[in-house]
Image (cartoon, rainbow over all chains, first blue to last red):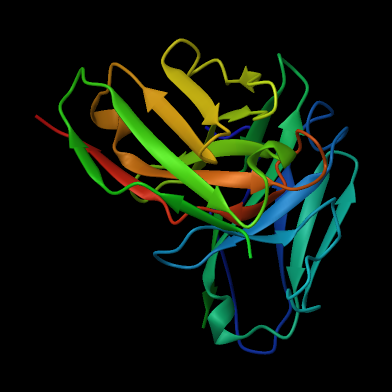
Length: 111
Length: 121
């Protein structure tokens, strides 16, 4: 059971806009930055969004992040076949001695 | 270019101890935190801990405290993650990852290629 909650799956057709949610608490998402990762099959995760809504250089602007209260979202517009991957949210959690928490991951299928 | 190169795949018996290395290049080891994350087959990402290579201060989640040790050798720009009392549930790909900004936050800008550890009798 992951500390951050994500839907296990999402899907869309090419060109569509898809949103993946990530729900937490005031100890993690509500009080700290959210980060998003994309993991293509057989590869290490790749940083997609940092500080809630910032994109590293090289990440297309089709990817965007947002946060409101204790929930965050990753939006992918103009969906492409190469976006088919697993997506994870992550945040620092202040509830105990401090630790990193991940969402369980969302498998995105491009139909 | 920042690179993290991890040691090769390992097969361990239950009860054994594993030690994985992560050699960094393209930056000075002491400049950034290093984290370790693992992923069991078909499962999600699980955080295992972090280290500040400058002073060696490390942090571990409760599930791994007492069983995982992360150390930094700044003379060789190499990080190590050691885990004892292995069981089949520890079969996973283990990743090292570098945080270049945002302090303790999980901003993993660079990742190692991963090390598969299989625990089987």
